[in-house]
Amino acid sequence: MGYDAAVLRRATQRLEQERKEREEQTESLRRRLYAQAPELCDIDRQLKGTILDIITASLKKGSDPTPALQVIKDKNMDLQVRQAQLLHSLGYPPHALDDVPACKKCGDSGWVGARMCDCLKALCAQEQVRELSKLLDLGEQSFDSFSLDWYSPLPWPGESVPPKENMEFIYELCLNYAQKFGKFYFKNLFLSGDPGLGKTFLSACIARTVAENGFSVVYDTAANLLSKFEEQKFSRDVQEGRQAQEETRRYLGCDLLILDDLGSEFSTPFVQSALYTLINSRLTSGKATVISSNLSMDGVRSRYNGQTASRLEGEYRVLRFYGEDIRLQRKTRL
Image (cartoon, rainbow, N blue to C red; front, side, top):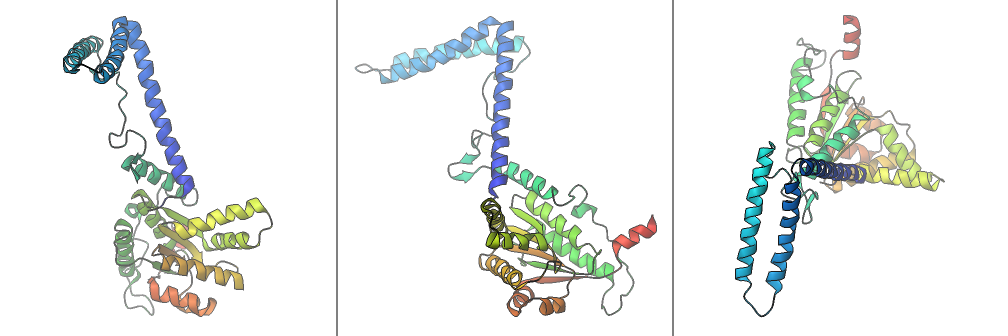
């Protein structure tokens, strides 16, 4: 999984800040305890000195360093016992003054060799959710808060199952897709249906769960996303073009791209080409994509070129939403 550079940078900065805060807290405690029991300061100085003594004894030529090392170790042990006694008398545990990292695996570096440590992954996941929250209201949007009460249990014109039964199936599929992301048998989803039926809500639920599980997720509207491709291609402003290029790299490289409201963008030959490039590139690289749209598959075939429609119809699991507009239902209940 590859995190966006900005997300990784913020997570790394948080890790470093937390490490510095722990060091400052330990140093503040050390100064306070030294003032209460000056002998602790002397013991600490002597303990640091024994390290040099051990190195000197180990490097000493012409003699067996073993006896000297044992004497130093015994002295070190006596000092640690006395330190623990003093700390106990002040109401602190034996290792209160040790600089102990919060993560024993990586020593708070965030990396174990060339592999990202779980502690840094957790911070990246938090930053992912924070990034998504700028675009989506993730405060209440979760699978736990999704309600089927807005969907009718009665037959629906032209459909074989009622809206509620249909949504029960869609909900379970989306939940499993998010929880088993990367291992689920469908890699790409196309959420299709009229406005106000929960497509964006479920997209947000998927985004939140996948991001919390440590995968890189990018959410954007089709109109905004495709405008970035246009800026990258046609912008005369160097800085603006560079920023657009960075954005398009995020769209192409993230583990999960959620493209909302496909069909709302202004259609031009370039936009058609950019959309195909995006969809085809992510399919070719094995990257997952969730698309929501008010368009049916018939609408997709009539709006987009044959290549794009073929990819969407053949490579995406289409989930069709139908029922009464939830927004209108809420208004009538107020």
